[in-house]
Length: 215
View 1 (cartoon, rainbow, N blue to C red):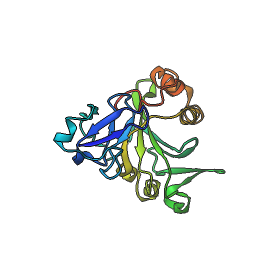
View 2 (view 1 turned 90 degrees about the vertical axis):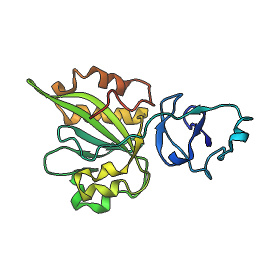
View 3 (view 1 turned 30 degrees about the vertical axis):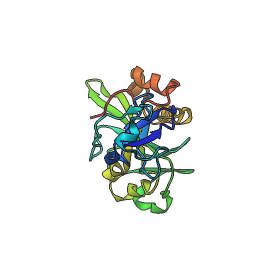
């Protein structure tokens, strides 16, 4: 058993050794937590006899998530760092577009602009086609691997999904970036009635990964 602490709420957690390296939600606060290797845990693996003398901690019991293998061609995608919009994707044949000081450029032709490491979130804007046109329905946020995630952007539209390591929340600055992008890049009637999304992007809940599961 691996014993460690949730970095978000400080809860003491237990996890089986076989799920080391996997990302699960903290059963206390709901924030994504990567189960550390035994050598990295604040409490190393302990025997059953030793466990009898240790105060019980919350145990992970959620199933492993299987991330999508392809981008949903109806949806829109954003990648943000700690406080900026980094890249966007729309199903228009241009592939991933990287934001620069001069506008957006194609990732496939500008590999040198793709950072090799950093803290990046993949934001999925869940859309549906109604009789009145395309409308925003929900939002989901994924944590990308700290290294080499964005270097996949020039290798094909869907390759970024292989870099997902778990669900993630957005901080205040990131929510402001996503809200600004919605207002700048999409007509008002696309998002104005998506009250759940707008409330999510303006509240102080920095742990929840979105407003609904995106299938």
